[in-house]
Each structure stands twice: as C-alpha cells, then as structure tokens.
Image 1: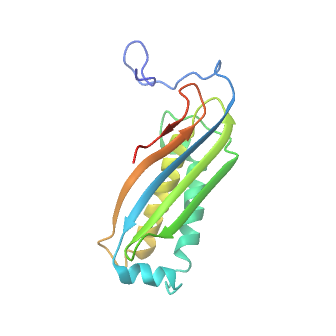
Image 2: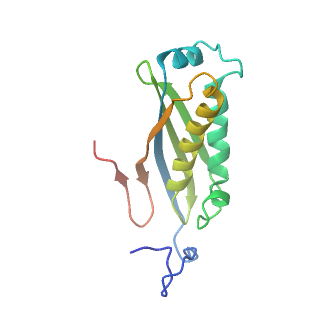
Length: 156
C-alpha cells in the first residue's frame, strides 16, 4: 500500500497524529568511486579546498536536518542524533554511512539516505577539478529500527 496517496490517488502527506512515539533509527550508505590518486590526496590532507571528509560530514548532517525541505512529503523531524562516517574502502572508494535517530511518530530512513547522498555529492563537488569521472553509487538503506513495521536489515 502506498501511504502517500489519498483515496483518489493524489499525493498527500501521511497523517501521523495518532501514531505512537517510539525510538527510531535508520542507517544508509553511499559510495564514491574515484581514481586512486584522488583518494590518496584526500587521505593525505593535500586537497587545496581543505579537509574533504570533514566538509562532507558536515554537509551530510545539514542535509539530514533539511530533508523535509527537499523531499516534498517528508515530515519535519526533531532528529536527536545524526552521524556521518566516511572511510576509504580499498584504494579507490570512499564509503559513507549515515545514521539518524529520534523518538518520534515516523521513520528516519529518508534523512539517513539524504545525509549519505549529500555527503557523496559534496565529495564530488570538492574533487571534481582533479577527477571528473568519479561515480556515486550504492546509495541504499542498510537498516531501520522502530516503528509499526518493526526492524529491517538489508540481506547481504
């Protein structure tokens, strides 16, 4: 059942007024594939624009807080925790994991996905002058906890 459609099939925001407040958490990821020398420059702190991981982490955090402004039918949420972790995965990939938490009436999957996506886009923006061929992929929800539908985790 698509919850963002009303009885006539029109888009509408889900009414969560009567839903119980529960602890909710979501973890999402994104990957940025790049030239090995680009990742090496990032890790060695040699990028002329500064600390790429720090800027991407802050961008992801800001994006999670603004998800409702970007995705039309998302509720504005009072997130209680946002973590964006970035690390090298091999010689040519940055792996991004975003975790969002709250006690609320609706889930935080979109906030985690938005955080991971914007962190990846920020890496691209900061490094495009030296590596225009970077590829952003693997954007997906890894797990969610809480709410009426319960827990879910991606199957490996």
